[in-house]
Amino acid sequence: MTEFDLIRRYFTRPTPGALLGVGDDAALLQVSAGNVLAVSTDMLVSGTHFLPDADPFLLGHKTLAVNLSDMAAMGATPRWATLAIALPDADEAWLERFSAGFFALAQQHGVDLVGGDTTRGPLNLCVTIFGEVPQGAALLRSGAHVDDEVWVSGKLGDAALALAHQQGHIMLSDTEYAACAPALHQPQPRVALGLALRGIANSAIDISDGLLADLGHILEASRLAARLDFSALPVSPVLRGHLQHPLAKQCALSGGDDYELCFTAPAAHHAGILDIAARLKLPLAHIGTIVAGLGCLVLDAAGDPLNIKASGYDHFR
Image (tube, rainbow, N blue to C red; front, side, top):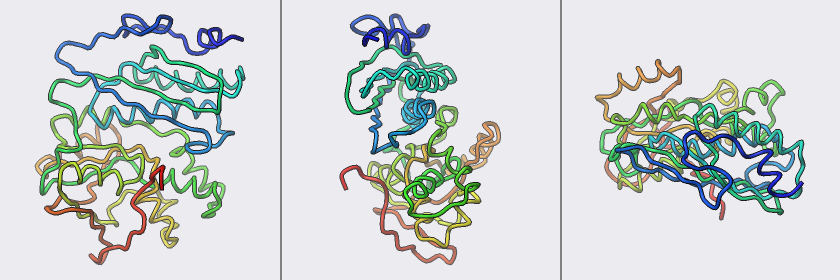
């Protein structure tokens, strides 16, 4: 099978949302009137972001999901994507499963694959995603205000807890691991939430490197601080059952791979945000407040500061 056979067989699909998709030297895209283009790139590397024997269907899903999460954080509607993939060899069974996972999620969110590249090499997956957002409506990291409420979607820490179990750092039962593993292998990008928060949230970010690290980017960009209530963090029954283990607290605060949204909004929108949660059937938790100053303080149930050793994942530390 040649490189071009591989592209035609596994990565060429109709692209109704593009003027020109896969097959030429470049795609041709038309942004809708009144919108601007949102663009993001994420790379997944075997051995760093996933295990070499990862299920290819779930890996195809996650490869696109982490990029859709960036669109969600900007309040953008995802439209198009490109995929650059390095493969050790052209394993047809692997490619069939990987492309099925990728396109199942792409179809769910109306995303056209419009180009990319293939080469031989260590397994490496890189997606660039393009979305649209009305002029001036994008959710930015720099928009937080003093007295904003800090919110997060979904549950925090299950992905990191599942990974810690895989690595032997903590022991989960088979049932507990089965409950946590989907968060690690098949994250659900919160695109609908991002769209619903336009005009409501002052700032937003997706949680890829851990709550404290990613909220820290909002605080740095907005030149403000935050005070969080650890007991308000939304965690699963599995993680809550292991909170006596210091690693479990670290998973919730700084474990990474959650791909939930963290956002800030005026207290006047509190009831409206709960209405969004009900409409989307997605739990949204108010976990703290934006305050003047710098940094982030996490308080325990008694109101005392927690001693936190790690704020999040960094590829070069």
